[in-house]
Image (tube, rainbow, N blue to C red; front, side, top):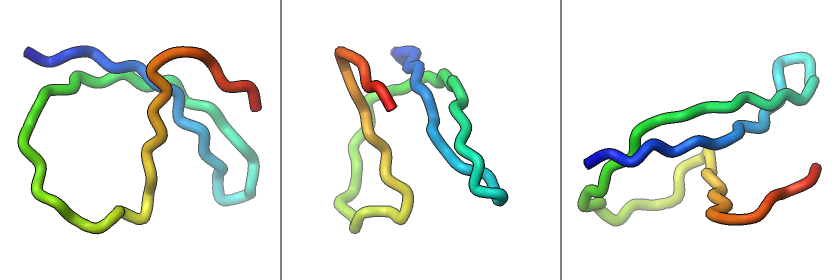
Length: 52
């Protein structure tokens, strides 16, 4: 059964200006194959908050 996940994406545009984008998607359990780290990294905070 998928579980809805909400997160905030922090990124910069081509002009170097920073932006926040609030996103939501369904997440399901699956078996993963070991692989090297991708170029883009995902940081997950399960509780608490971050101030930038």
